Length: 477
Image (tube, rainbow, N blue to C red; front, side, top):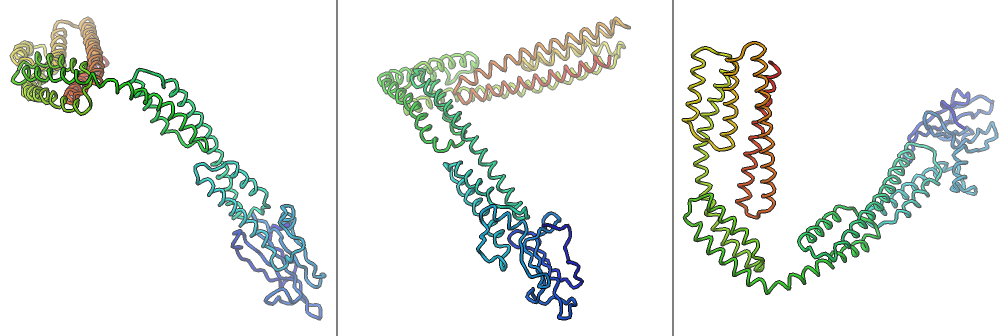
């Protein structure tokens, strides 16, 4: 039985008390009403309902007042009844028909809420362990749903927690299934490789499989057996690999002798040389022979490599210093040529076809030759820009009207095409350099290659900017 407002049972003296039930967080409403004086007139309720008043107790749920216990006043016979609360608790097997519920009408609700909290707590504790049994969690959550529910605020919150745990449990089950599947795929791959004799490549691949294994989550109780199977396949390969390398001891002495000879040769060739290109090629040839000399054992390899690398580093440090000085000179020349490019472009864009303007354009070509070389890639790039400006100017001076515009536009598009071809060539060079970077263990060589790549990438950006400017000029034309 429920009401959409608090009943006073037509008693003007009815006493209504409201409070929050701590366990359920629902509002409890108590109404004392209906007692009469000996002369039959209504009387005010006292401190409790033992003076003949009726005692009505209800929970406010979603705006309605759900009757829990109703003891009628003495004037109506004083009998007591329970509402849907009792029926729900009886259906859930919790309510004890033989117990005295008059003093504790909300105890079943409190016990139910506590039981739900206990079940959720146990489920959470189980899920904290890596190898917990999801079915055990499901049983606890199923037991939760079998407990009667009054839809009080506390119960709604617990149902939300119940949903969250159920979803998390299902996600964990799905994750375990996915993890088992992924680990089985890695096991199959490891087994396919366990008899390989491609030692270097397979060793790297086995390490990759291990790294992939580490990224896969836990697989539950099956995790240990899966790991043993996976590790067994890997270990079979690495045991074979170790036996293979153990057989190479007799070759290490020969490798050591070959490397010592290369060191003596490198010292004689590179110590005072300033033939940067020729000596570099010889050192690269020696490096190639070094790589083919085989292993002398890690300790000896490290010592011999440090000696050989010291000779190479000294040469490349001196070459780098010489290149630095040359680059400083190139920079000054590039700046001078860049200024001529800007000036030539300014004249070309201004369409100053006067005698003085034409004479100045001619003198720029003389100045360009006097400046000298400023580095192959930059020189080609700057010359291309300068030549384009010169071409644009002289073509502009020669041409007129639509024919002049057509010729200018055509040459500009050709210039764009050349730059795009240049970009393609530079990009291929970058790709080649990156291949070289992946095949050398030389730190200085790696730095040098990375510098070359950076310079090439800068040229590409500058060429793309030029293309953008030229295309913008075409658009404006």
